[in-house]
Image: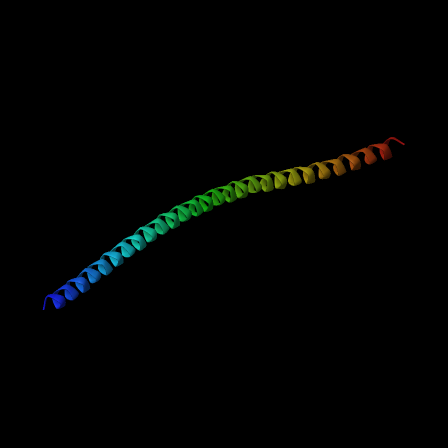
Length: 101
């Protein structure tokens, strides 16, 4: 009887140790999972910051090139006006030369 009691007590102790070991392993897995989640959140935040920065740069470039395009359009229009004025003046000069001879 006493031997049965000792054997049962030993089995109980082994089961308790097994449960304790599984609890420790479970806690370790939970800590590792939490660390991974923190790392993932940090990486996601960094990526979102980078996306925001790149979007801001894209917006700035669009604004810059839009301004440059408008300026170029204005310059081309001014150039056409000057070319037309130049042609007009050339025609007047030719007319004056023709009238003086």
